[in-house]
Length: 137
Image (cartoon, rainbow, N blue to C red; front, side, top):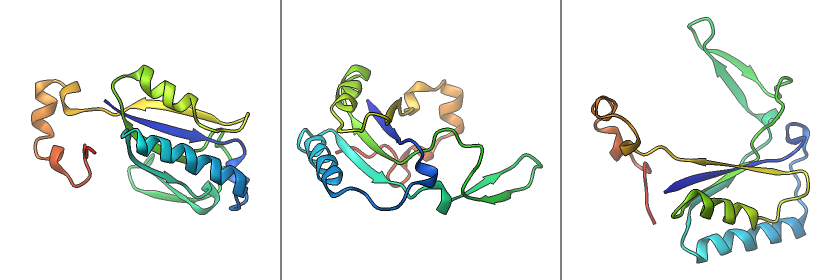
């Protein structure tokens, strides 16, 4: 089962790009543990929303809004994609993260084609083999 663990840091929309070196070392040790256990598929940190953009479609046409986004309450700071046996295993890995006291990790299971009805699987035929889609270790 694939799970995405989403890091939600506080005040990230206004956070400086600099990270504390000791915190970075602790995070890299955690990432190495995920890799050594054979559960890590991929991971990335994300730049703050102030450097991003949103594309909305409320009018039926794309409208681009540059960051920062005043209405944001929670933003993503990064993610890990892991492959583990269960939701409980994903929670166990997230619980080992050296996150600070005010950070949150949201855990979401990745949808697999088998999760959908036969009709939806037929409608999506051919997309299950996209590069990177469903990649396994």
